[in-house]
Structures are given as C-alpha cells and as structure tokens.
Image (cartoon, rainbow, N blue to C red; front, side, top):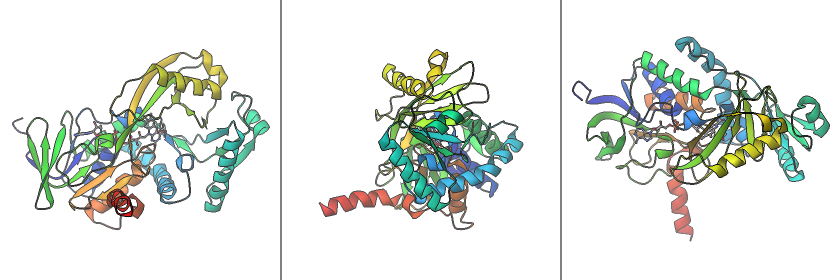
Length: 383
Ligand code: FAD
Ligand code: GLY
C-alpha cells in the first residue's frame, strides 16, 4: 500500500467501457483521474457483450434513446479509427448490416410499424418479403414472413474495445487500478469527499463518477438509491465451417453475430436472477435453439465458448446519466442495459462535457438520475 496516492481530482468507480470512456475523455481535458476497478478492467458486461451497434434494432419507439444511439453510431465512425491508431488494437469495426426476421404475422406487423417510424425519422431501413429474404440469405430458415434490413448497422469486437480503452486511458495518464473494490462514497455536508475501499483504505476526491455497471446501486453512502439491477445474458460461440451470413441475423428470441475469425456469436438470454453469473443448461439450450431456428445448418457447428454477463438494467430501460440529484459532485453513468457498447462514444463525450463543464452535455433529460426517484414518489403520492 505504501506509495499509493491518497487523493485525486476525479475518482471513477468501475472499469467497464463506460468508466473507461469517461476516464479517457476527462483526462484529455486535463483532469487528474484515478479509476478503481474491483476485478479486472473490461471483464464484466463489457466483455460479455455481442458487439452489435444497432440503434434502430434496439429502440422500441422513436425518442431520446433512439436519438442518443444514432448520435453514438455517428461518433463511432471516427472514434473507432482514432482509438485503433492511438493503441494499435484492431477493433473489428465493420458495417455489416442487420436483418431482423419475422416468423409470425404479429412480429411482421411490429416490424412494419418500426419501419414506418424509422422512415418518418429518416433512418435507412428496408422491408424484404419472404422470397427476398431467402434470396439474400440462403442459409436462413426457409419460413420467414419477411425481414427488416438495417444496412447501416455495425459490429465491433467489444473485448478489444475494453483493451483499447484502458490502453488509451493509461497512455494519456489515467491511473487505472485493478483489484480495488469501492464499498462507500464518503459524503460530508452534501458533498462527496472521497471513497472508502473494501481493504479499509480511502481515497480523497473532488468529484466521483459511479460507473459500476450492474453493481452501481450497491455502494453505501449515497442518499436515496440507484435503481440499477442485473439482467443476466448467456452467450455461445460457434465455429461453423462457413458463417451463415456476413450480416447480423436476429429474431424475437435471439441473434447471430459473425466475427472476422469465422466464429458466430449466438445470444442471448435476458434473465432476472440477481448477481448469479453461472452459465446454465436451460439458458444455453434456449440460445442454441434460437441459433438453429435462425440458421439450421448451425446444428452441426462446434461450440467453442460459453459465457454470461450482467447487463445494468433500469426500471424504464433508459440509461442513468448525470449529476446525482442530492450530491452534486457525484455523477452517475450507468443503466446502459443492452446498449452500452453502442453508447460508449456518446457517453464518454457527453459525461466529459458535463464533468468538465466545457459545454452543454447534450444528455437527454429523460436520462436524468432524479427521474426514477420522482417516478417512485409519484406512485406513492397518487396511490
Ligand atoms: P460493466 O462492463 O459491467 O463494467 C462495470 C465495472 O464496474 C465492472 O468491471 C465491475 O467489476 C466494476 N465494479 C462494480 N462494482 C464496483 C465497485 N464497488 N468497485 C470497483 N469496481 C466496481 N451492448 C451493445 O451495445 N451491443 C451488444 O451487442 C450487446 N450485447 C450484450 C450481450 C450480453 C450477453 C450482455 C450481458 C450485454 C450486452 N450489451 C450489449 C450491453 C453492454 O455489454 C453493457 O451495456 C455495457 O457493457 C455496460 O458497461 P458498463 O461499463 O456500465 O458495465
Ligand atoms: N444487445 C444485445 C444484448 O444485450 O443481448
């Protein structure tokens, strides 16, 4: 412990892609930053993800979430090459497109509705009927009613992203410490003065960012609660003799993401089982059933890896980004749920602006940390 610093201008709790992207951004603006990670950086949800960058694929309606995702995807096109150049890490950032398939009339109607509002918003998307799907994607199951083609979707290697972000952050002067579990935020007179760690040590700070993913609600010391909970996702990697498609293929029950090395990532469950990270027989059965339903020839493909991760979920499905409603020098950056990889560049940029007070952050008010406490209060007062 001797020689370890006792304070920093900004302490960031959590070394997933969210904490790392913010660290990189604020360090570039000249701040003195220490990032504390309880395990190894980039090894939780950020490592477990499938790497799809799909604003329309994940948005259920037009609105702030879609706009934030579209903005992030635009940023990705310069963020990826810059990060690769800075670090030498190949991110496998590819404009692969996505085909979202409908196997039922209900799903066809839902996708048709999504197509209409996508067009109204000017997002490029196209409908393929059943025969067109079979022509475009011969390996796909023979009975789709059609599919929504999103040609502007990308994919990235999220594990490489974590590696590149920590390398870039450290090279620019961020002190990223691993094996450092924060247990409490030390708050005095309505302001954070630092953090307390599981080993009994303390670190003073002028400001603190909580970017602890699914664990963001577990820290002691903050008034109120951070209503983020874990949503487990189980995944399987297959190594077929030929990938079924260069595109991401998706339907209601799951998705297939191709990788440059010929693997296909099949995902994913979405389970509320607390902090259990086990890979289970039932979960993997469901993921494999979905994969083979999409592309039947995958039934013969060797399974090469199984894993799971905990998505940081919120009650309304939106991220939590901004200053804590009661402790103004604590910033929350969490709740990215199914889209933290997509939202990495825009989160880093927006939180950087907010923390450094350089210019307006552009964070939608719908993502404000106080909204969830307000919703709970509204429910109490109206009942
Ligand atoms: P994490 O990566 O979980 O990082 C949080 C970090 O905080 C962890 O490293 C943790 O150890 C650390 N930490 C927690 N508590 C403490 C503490 N007390 N002290 C110190 N450190 C602490 N998103 C997409 O955009 N596209 C996808 O295709 C996609 N696919 C997914 C598939 C699966 C199966 C899963 C699970 C997620 C997927 N996601 C996807 C979502 C994405 O992975 C997450 O939204 C994103 O990684 C969240 O990043 P994070 O930094 O907030 O969390
Ligand atoms: N975005 C894909 C997932 O979370 O499984």
